[in-house]
Image (cartoon, rainbow, N blue to C red):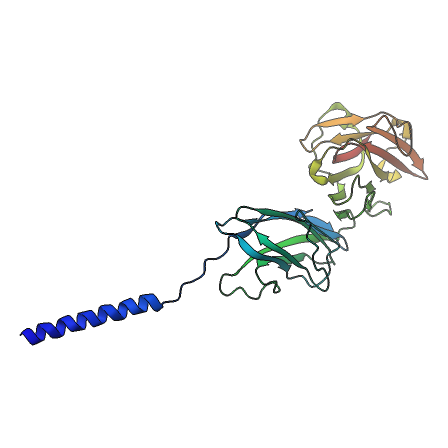
Length: 311
């Protein structure tokens, strides 16, 4: 009996020792860094074919520990047309994106703006944060990277133009050939570079317009989306061409004004004649002329919205 108890005690001690050894020898998994990508914005959500898709986002170390080496790469094979970051780091652009930011302390952030030229189909990309700078999609089997995917819609509609502007005074234009199938064309001179800007016409319904001047409309609505609806201190130029067949007989250039429906749904008329063709000092204002059988309306505005001629 004593020998049996001693044998049981020896077995228990041996088992405990082995379990202890296993606990000591078990590998310890490294904690995933606190990197993340926040506030990813499409600049703009829809771009014209052949245009530029822009993105802005914030890289943040949301963990408690400092990140000793931080890299940003992406899946798109090609050179971005624009890249900036708040740290001022000079990144590798060719043949592919690779930003070596170095250390990122706990709680610190880096703001990034990047833009690519698109083709004729929707544009997709995946941004990656890691500690090696390997292309996105690799080196992520052990939780040592962070991926963020995004897709921008690409429009081939001839009544649409726009994207991320890469130069100041960049001109956007819809189909300029007027006729019964295209009653209105629109062009916009962007008020600034490195902003999202789009224009679209061919719109006949869905725009609020309830003031008395909305009773007699010509042409179609033209929608402008300029830098998320920002208001500018200096007016920017919009040109609308209206097919003569969309204007009732007897209406002259002197009879035509512009209705501007803001993003908040309120509408007001613009009737003031511009005192200059290039840089009027009395904006918001318009200049209306007849070109052949068609009508040309040049408007100088401080903010975007929907525009349509009236009489």
